[in-house]
Amino acid sequence: MPNTGGNRPRAKTSGGEPLDGALAPALATGVGVLDKSMTIVTALEDGPARLSELTDRTGMSRATVHRLASSLDEHGLVRRTTDGSFALGYRLVGLAARALGGSALAETARPTVTALRDVTGESAQLWLPDGEWRVCLLSVEATHELRTIVDEGSRVAIDVGSGGRALQGEAGTAGWVATVGERADGVGSVSAGVLGPSGSVVAAVGISGPIDRLGDDPGARFGGDVVAAANELSEALGVPPRHG
Image (cartoon, rainbow, N blue to C red; front, top):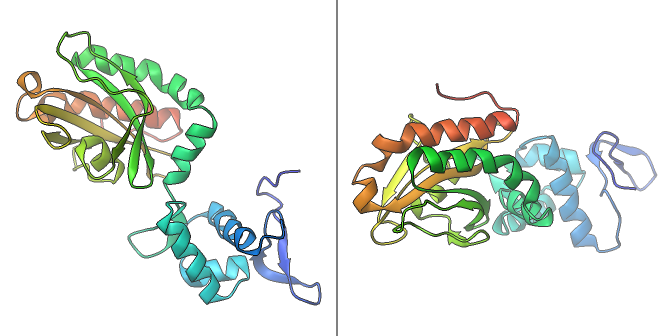
């Protein structure tokens, strides 16, 4: 029976006594490295933790926790926060969306993304992080003959374009980030991060279109509309709006 977190098993000493604050692997498969890695992931369900705290939570040695958590970080399943703590990695969001076929989130977001397309007149997309990439979960094309076309399921490097920058938390105080010709020549875009219940960015919503129509400063023109859409999606996830 799957463990849901409320009554997760506690690690025990060789004498069978519970080890204070330590979590046993949710399922002992006999594959030691896998079980220990999943123990770290499970421990981070309670929130970010410094190495010493994560060691306490798991009951494993400091060296083992550091080695496995660092490896999980390389794979995007764990990440380091600005203060050096370990936290669940953004790649888990992309994996979860793929496991679900993306349908639940996509269908929840579709009216908002479609409305963003309608109010701006430009193609609108919803992106999820996937390690060093971002994945287009939802794409609604503009009706103009000349428009940007992004296929759902497309993967783009996360370090280029406004969508990737928004996923990495680079939006300014106004809540949006814009790029011109960064991901593709002649294309501009404006994006904003969508927050999850923990307050971290879990997705990015935005628009893209030809520079000839968006202009050299698309953020000034469309930033407010994009932020409004991001806030609406954040609210759907239980987060109060940040602006407006």
